[in-house]
Image (tube, rainbow, N blue to C red; front, side, top):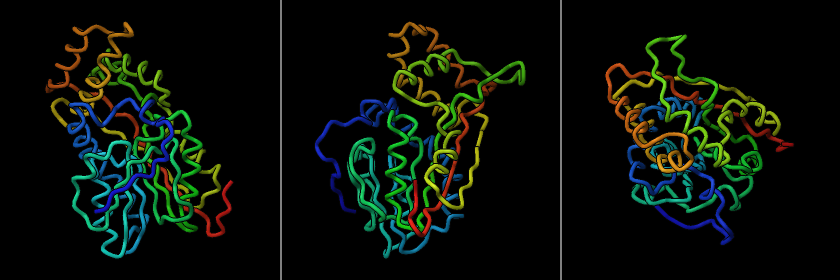
Amino acid sequence: MSRHDLQTGHQTTAETFYTFENSGTQVATRFSALADIFDPGTIRHLTEIGVGSGWRCLEVGAGGGSIATWLCDRVGGNGQVLATDIDTRFLEALNRSNLEVSRHDIASDPLPQAKFDLVHFRLVLGHLPNRDEVLGRLVTALRPGGWILAEEFDSWSLRPDVSINEAETSLKAFAAMQAVLRRHSFDGYYGRRLVARLRAHNLAEISAEGRVFMYEGATSGADLTRAAISQTRDEMIDAGAISATEIERDLLQLNRSDFMMPSPIMWAVRGRRRMGGQER
C-alpha cells in the first residue's frame, strides 16, 4: 500500500459540512454497520458492472475500507485502487499492495482526468453543498468507457408511519437529526435525484435501484441509527429540538425486540462514460 495527499493546501470544505466525522467514538460501529447492511448490494452492482483484473478504480470517501479491500482483491496485481477520504486512519491499516491511500477533500481538491475504469462513492455527495459540481468532476475522472456507481440515501421520502404499519417505531431523535443535517447542507433526497444528475452528463447505460430494509432492535440497523443519533446528540440538544432524556429514551428503544423502522432508501445509480467522452 502507498499513501500520498492530493490536497492543494486550500481550505477543506467537506470537513466543514460532513456531519458524521471519522473521529468520533461511534465511527467503528458506524463503519461496521454500513458494511454489514449495504456492502452486499454494492458488491452485486460492482460485479454486474464487470469490475475485473487490471482495472483502475477510484473509491471516494472510502471510510473503513471494506469496498476498497474488495476492489483490491477483484482487480488483482495488475490493477490499482485509489482510496480517498478526508480522514484516512482506517484506510492506512489495510494491507494491499495494489492499494493507494490519499487524504483528499473531494469537495475542493483536484482529481486526475480520464484515468479510472471505475469511480464509486457511497454516502458522500449528499453532504456537500457543491455536490453537483463534484459529481461532474467525478465523471470526467472516468476514462471513456469507464463506469461510475453512485450510492446515496433518500432519507426523507420514507419515514416510520404507524398508520401504515403499527409495528413501526417513530423516534423523536430521527426528526431532530434531520433538522441538524439540513443545517449542514445535507440533501436528504439526493439519492432520488441521482438519475437526473447522471443523465445531465450524457452517460450511457444508466440504471438505478432503490434498496430498503426494516431496521430491527439490536441489529446492525439499530447500531447505525444509534451511531447517527450519538454523533448529532449535542447539536440536537443545543438546537432545542429534543432533550437529553428524550434521546436516551430513543436509544433504549433501539435495543428492544419489538423495535422496527424502515431504513433510508439507498439509491444505487450507475452509468458509463461514452467512448467519445462527450459529456455535458
